[in-house]
Structure formats: structure tokens, C-alpha cells
Length: 349
Picture: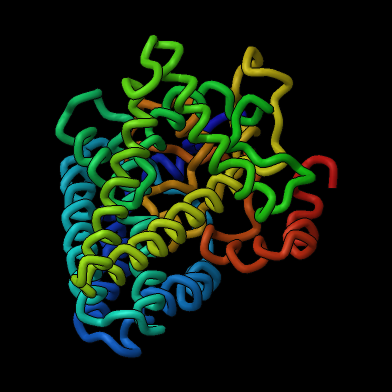
């Protein structure tokens, strides 16, 4: 299977304007506004991502002719840092809101909105930056973003196991054909953590010297500190702790939903068999592409892991999702509906 074939007509096309990718900043901006205004406005992120997002995926449709990737990455590098900065501003407004709101339904609404936006601005950004050189400023930003949603082991597991063993039983982030989303969530989250532990252990980093264990301990200490302050009479700390747990959980579940649909039912015989474009689901849905930093061109990401997102190419012959990531969310939550939706697309159904 070959990437985009550039015929005479396509050769004349220019890359899409980079500004389309600024659309991804709408979600965290709405959440920041909601956290500041409070009340019903805390639902802005939920409504935009869970309701309007799927509609945009459908009405904006898919690119009929894939435009060539861009060569210059300067605006996109700035965009990644913009996502990171906006994410931490969003987190700051959430903690401020939680400290002042207390235990109300709006705390849950704000946590859901913030977590959903963080799944893109924090995790998708960290996913991209995590492929940069270890210790570089971008890599360090990725670490900070992942700590902010309590999933710091992701980069290790993703880079050193998922990319090596994707679409095999050795990869906990690759969903099996007979596996529903809920079962996958229960398996993949602890499975990926333990996989990251084993990766570090193979390098001789055991016990408390293992970065995955250290990351978990840091998370527990921070949340425990907030709870201790709450029991000591600082009533603002309890809602902050609860809200942080909820927003982290929804961000992580959203990430793992994306992992689910990217490789569901596509298997290699073993990690020794070379990954091909047919081992990942792709989509040219405009809204998902632009707002999620080309995450939907997933085959090329696995074939060329070091290639930045703005250079990823489509593979027209690769398995194609029926819609973008947003529009797949609700059907995916009901496994029988998801299987019917994917009938004729996935091998074996």
C-alpha cells in the first residue's frame, strides 16, 4: 500500500493553510471561559466536544483529494507550544473554580469539560512532543503535560512498546476484534502502566528508581496533600483534589478511546512481521484532522514515527473509519452498534 499518489492534477495542489489547525484551540478556550464564568457555562467544553464535535465531523466531511503535507514546521511548532501554554492556563482556571465552587454538580461539569479539552491540548500535544529528542524543551513540556493529567508513563509505553508491538498481543494499547471499548479500558490502562514498568526494569531501573513507580508516587503524594489540607480545615483543597481526579480520568479514558479505534481488530502475526499501513485505521475527516493535529493519519505515524505531524501523509488504501474520531465516540460506547457500524470494514465481520 502506497501513500498519496501525486498525479498531474494533484501535483498542482498546495498544502492546506496551517491556520486550519488553530481550530484545535477552540475547545480549551471555551473551557477557560466556562471555568471563569461558572454555573451553566462550565458545560461549554462538554457540549462542544461531545455534541457539536460529532456534528462538525459529519457536516465538514472528508477531504476528497488529500492535499500534500507541508515542508515548513515553524507555525506548527509554535502551535504545539500554544496548546501547552493554553492547557496550563485552563488547568489554572479549573483549580481556581474548584477552590471557590466547592462540592456542587458544576464541579463535575467543569472537571468533565476540562478533562475532555485536556485529552487534546495536553495528551495529543504530549504525544507529538514525546517523539522529540529526550531532554529537549519539547520533550520536557510533554512530561509536564502528562503529569498534569496523571498519566506520566504514557511516553515510555507509547514510544518503546506501542510502536514496536502495535497490532499484536504484546501491545496492551491495541484492541482485539472481539473486545468492546469498556473491556478494553479495563485491560489497557493497567496493562500500559505495567508495560512501562517492565521497559524501565529491562534497563536496570527497578524499585523506586523506576520512573513509572516514581511518577505514580508523585501523583499519590500531590493528591494526598490536597486531601490532608482539606481534613486540616482548608475546605478549598478537597474539591480541587476530587476535580483533578475526575478530569484526569476523563482525559485518560478519552485517550484510550482513541487508541481503541486506531487499531481495533487489525492484527499482525507477531512483532517480527513488519508493520504495514493496513494495521491502523485512518480518516481524512476534516474536523478531526485539523483539531487533533493530524492524529487521524495514523498509518504514516507508525511507518515513520520520527516524522512530525505536519508531514504525515494519507494512505488511501489503508483501512478507513466511517467518520472522524468525534463522530465515532457515541457508537463506540455501545459495542453492538460499533460492530454493526464497522461491518464490512474490519476483517472478520
